[in-house]
Length: 133
Image (cartoon, rainbow, N blue to C red; front, side):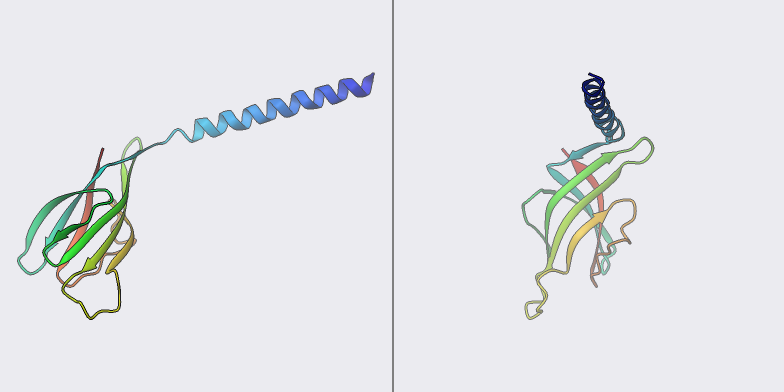
């Protein structure tokens, strides 16, 4: 009789422990992440010193002068103080046909710190500004 009570009490404790884990996971995972449909970039032409603002739809390729930009994903996570905007970009240099490299840049870029994964091009600089829904 005592053994059955212990087994039932153990099952109840296990169920309560599982519920606590699920609840705490939902509380701490309350950060909202919004995926956008468009990306807004600022492009600096280093030769002419002109800034351009470009909106590109996610998944579509946009040709800007001598480079081709294709955003694959854009996320806008909203924190209390400072939202972090990240995007996955693929950039090709269309002028350099004989180059064996497919992409000049292929990776994640961050709006708050673009120097983490830098876009290195002799003529253009890219900055991620917005992820638009």
